[in-house]
Image (cartoon, rainbow, N blue to C red; front, side, top):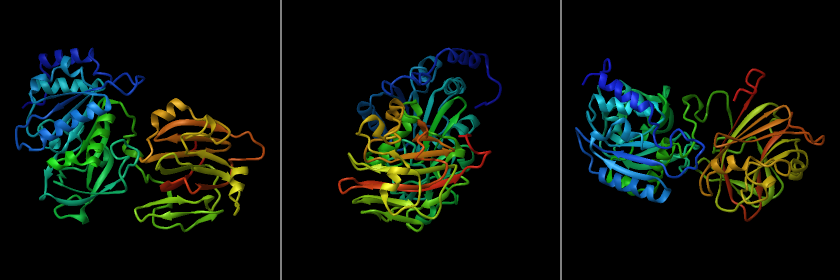
Length: 451
């Protein structure tokens, strides 16, 4: 099928597409409800017996999460007018050459007008002579070994498709190798650990990723070959998060330069040791053996004793079990008394149920977060949230899951953000809060204020 200059029909299709904005995709101020999703599952090659299960699962997700779902295998529905009704199109294990020239042009125009794409499994085994589609999906299928168990390493704990997962995810599936590595142009969410199964040939082996592409949003997961996948809660949540990102119902940072562990950050807690930390006051933090630590007892403070920090970006993930209390302290002097941090530093609150200036994202007792922004960004108890705290001079910016929710400047003569230690609170016997991936980057004059 040709991929050269557009015909008059293609140009006409794009003209129509330019005036028909997909669903709600361009209306970012609306509430995240009422989105519309098209599931496309046409196959011109191998047909997966999991497709019907996948369609049923997406329909069920729509009923549970407030978006409408239509399903088709008719490529004739790929017209500018029809595609404009949808916020995202799910390519569910499509295979082979499934669109003609005009249909390709219509879908390309749809993405360019802000539409969303979700590719599941064999969506990468599709449209091999359409280079634009390879860019949208992120990579084309190359080969696969037999179905087997493998360990998935989760790289991003902020994206809605992976926020519910631990650092490792063990599951059984058909594990694709790809012709190219998508990492350079996509934000990798999860990779395969090739040491845990046979037949991987990529070394660095992304399996799920997202990206902004040609005006739209793209999410792809190579998982989902088996019927059993669509009965697995963790995988179903994985797909839901991808749909929510693609429709615009959930924000996510899909810049390939912003993955966790980016250059310049030093790990203060990598999940294996508390070396460099000191416990002030009662209680403690226990290592869980899965890269996380959990608070017990209190009220105490686990603080980084080895160094005071000046200008820096501090990143960490935290998770509450329910109505729990904890906080991150900054800008306090060294002390074995946890009250020293309370009296001379600043606490960034985690508990979401207190008063406005003492709830998640607040500088405790001093300044509330932007509650509307905070509520939109906050994941519920049982799911991981990510903080980034940027301290420069007397200014503290608080990002929750990549959303700026508080911009605070210290004016208290008894406290100063210009130098101090950082710490994590264990609030009491009834408060269970876990932390992971605590890392810090000291900012130079050139780096300051560039986020």
